[in-house]
Image 1 (cartoon, rainbow, N blue to C red):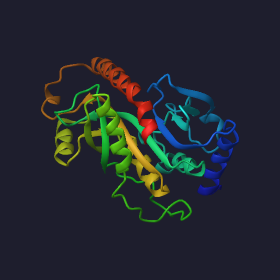
Image 2: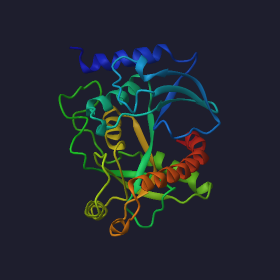
Image 3: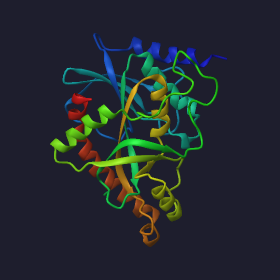
Length: 279
């Protein structure tokens, strides 16, 4: 059986061999395939996940790819499509892709994903600027034998979402006169929606938004010594008591989610290049 480190080296070697000439990226972005990129971000080339050894593929990620991009004078790697724990993959498979970025020389990661909001002051179609998280996924990508070459056994999580990157991102939103929703992110497994009682509990526990993907990416990045920032696209309202009054069908709720996603995606398009320039 191939060991964990050998798999990471195998993946990073293949990706590294496909880098464009004179390409050197210190920043990576992780995003769902449906989150658009601003026109100013130029895609130089790409490699499909299916072409990379040891990249686990799920139904949702089989068409994903690694994009080699340039924004202004800055090179960046984009994971266009991500693994989700709720698809049945292991935490180690999610971690694998983060460690590959470490081997490729990436120093910073910006993760973009959908979230639902628990805070009644927030609105769908806006952005959640994540500065901390609570892990209620019942699992952790660092469980098992520690690989000292990747990181220390007990990484310090006091600056899990890099404060300087967060402040720089917020400054871009302020400059664009876009509302800043400072957020504690709650990580849960999904894929089912949340009950009214759960939403109330999650809010009382101190969280503002929730999602299914960012926490294991963050923990792995911290372990690997990579600075990490995250932005949530708010597509669902999960405010306790209001949820019990909901009368829409699952189909109608999905239509509404997609409308909210389109709106928040438009906000991301407005700010992403500015954020890339300053973080």
